[in-house]
Image 1 (cartoon, rainbow, N blue to C red):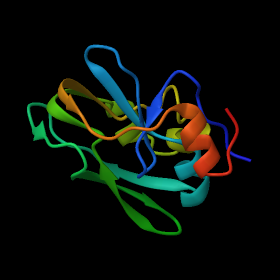
Image 2 (image 1 turned 120 degrees about the vertical axis):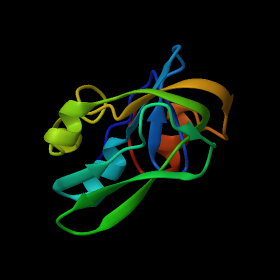
Image 3 (image 1 turned 180 degrees about the vertical axis):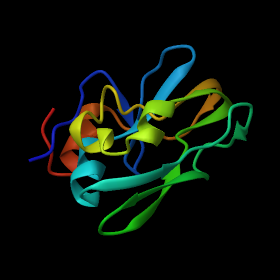
Image 4 (image 1 turned 135 degrees about the vertical axis):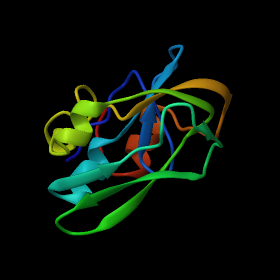
Amino acid sequence: MSQVHAGFRYSEEHEWIDENSPATVGVSQVAADALGDVVYIELPEVGQTLTAGEVCGEIESTKSVSDLYTPVSGEVVEINDAVVADPALVNSDPYGAAWLFKVAVTEFGPLLSAEEYAAANDATV
């Protein structure tokens, strides 16, 4: 059973976000488990303006290719070059080393609490 990090909020598209400033975005263990071995990640560019709910990148595994959605609106201020270089980090540490990008948030999209997300995805907090 997948684990959900209690300190984050989640989008229905399986991205997690902390509420720091800037906010850090990643993909949940639920998504990582469903994808299987992640082999490629395409992230938005630093300086790019994102709109909550829109596609902002791509994550590819040995099983499929999935879009990444941004859970917030704002400007990308940093990307995680380490996860681009080693996409398998998504499988081994989705809530830590595999964070994807940081955003100076102007607006939050609809988000679920860890408990709501876990209940909807047969996961544990």
